View 1: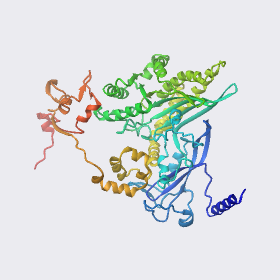
View 2 (view 1 turned 60 degrees about the vertical axis):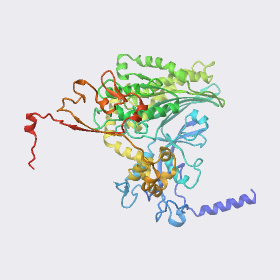
View 3 (view 1 turned 180 degrees about the vertical axis):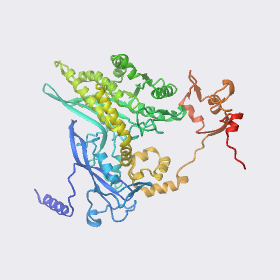
View 4 (view 1 turned 120 degrees about the horizontal axis):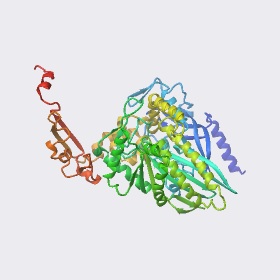
Length: 611
């Protein structure tokens, strides 16, 4: 070692003496802003390796701790200095689970008892749903095909993206030393074929764009993001060769919900077709631009509630611009499987030509041989049990072609069968892990009535007792100090979506955001909108189903005289073309007159007020 290296080593040792070791950690997720004045460093303290892919260990996070970065006084958002907490402000310490802020924390008018936030978030981060790659060159947020295109991290699956913002604010490159985490499921198995060692894996990436538990978050939002959107990738790799199949699932992309007490049956409420048209259009536009040619497989049943949602979904699709571009396949899973267990096989045979046309990604020794050009979008009500069954069958169908594309079947009789057995087991475990995140229990597979019944009971308990705090944890982790903030909501209506999702400035410089909101008239341009205001005399209910007496015209013709709406064969109003919605009024207000029939009986029952 030369003198220069000796000098560097000595200076580094001297510098280290000025700091106190707080804890051992496997990595840092970033800085979480719990409130305006309270920031914590999220350190990973427990991990479990789930296997190796592409030369990197895929790691499940099993425990986390918070290190308080609290300063004595507030630091201005424009102050570029990095405060030396150890030397100037007092040493930071591991966050105590017995206290958070004294005496309590306020987030947007929402008060939490002391100690509740940190304990709740630590449990959430230690629940085993977070994964990261030990090698920064392997971006776990990307499927194999996108990774080969050298694309940046996918913000849909980059869960701790906002935790990197405090560093990016000061121009610090976080790519090499902060973790990139996804939520979902990663399952890897090693398989040997002769002298070759391979990997078989299932990776399910849950989107963070619209996150929540089963009965708290349903359907789509106004940006076209849907609940429980999961990209599942089936990977088979040997040596320097790999192949990858991607399927997606997601809640029905309409405005709908299931409110009420979480016991037994939950009534599905679907908003009007006109209200969902824009969200549906945005969602399908995103899917097709991201994945190419899309095929929808709708597994909703014919029971009350599901039938109404399925009808709304079908009608919305049939009357959208995607009616011909996206094939829509209805398959009542429960009804068909009661008729015959072979019904699923018939569905897979129907999907086989579609899968063959869309193909899958293949890379042999670093050379891309084929790319996936289409995707199956599968859904049921919860996008859990039925969806997993169909995606499993599709994955097993394509696995044979994946094995052939890697040249593994040559001279090896049982390779295909062995890989199918591994995949069947991985898909079953994948279903359980995805179900645990969204519903709180494993998947219902129909093989054991006792197991399914016990899991259904567990789901009911989960929905009633634990989903609320879990939902709060999702929201707090993703939005931090902005959770339930009026300023955040106002700014979200002003600033473009890419700025909100990908730019640190919105999250880090709260004073600047306040300034933007206060000067809204200077930074925005008002756009005129159409408002329809009318009164409807329903004549005591006699004209409830038609604005014109004796069915001479439809109410839609009154509100939308330019033919932007129409009717199907059963008289349901629906959007004819999404493009024409621009000519329709943005706000519709209708006052109803004579809701009660003005007959003698009703007049006698009415309360009279003496003036």
